[in-house]
Image 1 (spheres, rainbow, N blue to C red):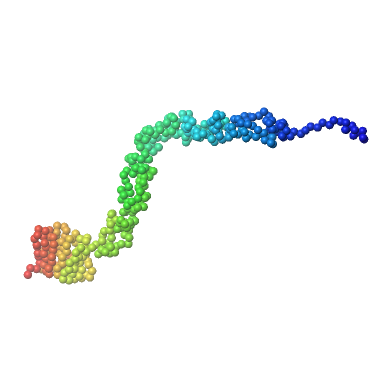
Image 2: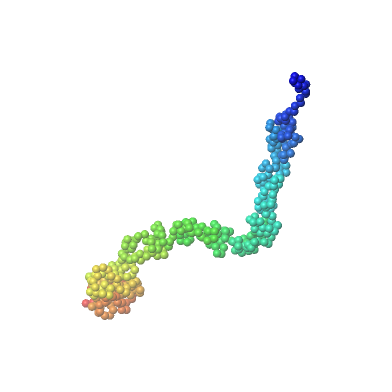
Length: 395
């Protein structure tokens, strides 16, 4: 047994060391080790230069490479021949590259990708960047584009419509008022809300070159059915609760005219009193009488006494009324004709008879009367020539 141990002690035992990161030698499984980079540089990793190094864990350290840049880092290095990098296009577009339009992109090798750009002149219309190609206008015309005439063409450089000739015919939107347009843009053709009888507001022009009255309508106008009390007495059927009587008129029914003013109300313009009856001249040219009526002196076609005014029948356009004891007379604005009614026992009605009348009768042969006066049984009229005519009792 001792001899066995002696043999073991006499043998030379050789051992092999395990590879270890940090020993300065690049072993399988390591990208590098210390200064041993395996003969590689930043250029081997598509960087444009710099100093490649090794991390403590035997992986490559690209810090010194990154500073010089690489295609794909999103920064355009023009010194190394890059036109673009990723989304960085250097403010370039399809148009700036001489193409018709579209979406410019960048290739993986940092050169421009123009596949998304329209190429004017290739015979293919790339919508929406091109609207035409050569004679192909896609059915469009000057009028279909909103112009009023002309010949549409295609711009050979941009493959977009050339509307130069169309523009000479005008269109809605060119700020020029043409036939069929009420306005155009800011050009209101010297009109405003007041031009259309509105009380104010800001007139504007719509996209169809017709007036937009929205702001004007808010300001109101006569005829809109809304009572603007600061400018109107009424509007349509709107009177603000007012009536002829509340407006201190004698009578009548309020009516609104086209100027939003109230008319139709009646006022007494003259009053005359006799022995037992009275008459009043109304502003509409008619006559009202009341009181004793045994001889028809109220002129309503009856002999019924009246406690309130009744209208004298058949009279209009009267300018003056006079009352006697039992008869009445009035002068018309029509050539100064005189009408009388009531008692006529002494011929005081002037109609050539002595028959009492319950309604007006025209004085025979008398015109141009300017004033009239009645007594108990007689009547006299002043003529426009300055003469006086009388009839009736003369005793």
